[in-house]
Amino acid sequence: MAAIVQAALCASIFFMIGLRYRPFPDSRYKLSVSIMAWAACAITGMQCVSLVGRMVIEHDFADASWFNTAFYFLASVLVFRAKGNVARIIRVE
Image (cartoon, rainbow, N blue to C red; front, side, top):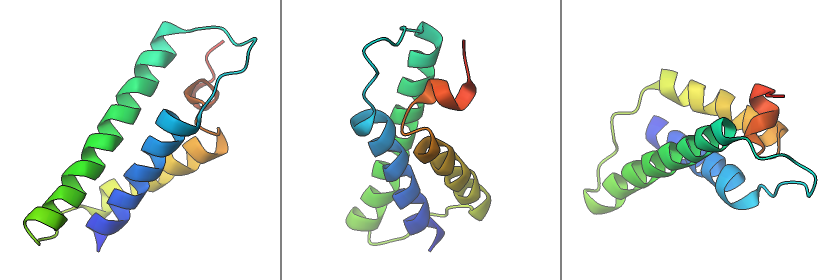
């Protein structure tokens, strides 16, 4: 059960950061924030593919920790509140 919830949370984070976020026209480019956003998008996307792939190919649920699932839940809440803008999460000026 934790694997299904974790895959859904990872997919939501990946979708919000990677596909939904669009910068404002007057926003400044920050390399460190871009690297963090890329890493968060890549890691959650790979985690989702790993969990779903194991469920589909091997017909087995991965051993997912509820602590990791809780972390992904908190991360998804932050990403949804910031509408995919990683700079708003970490408040870099």
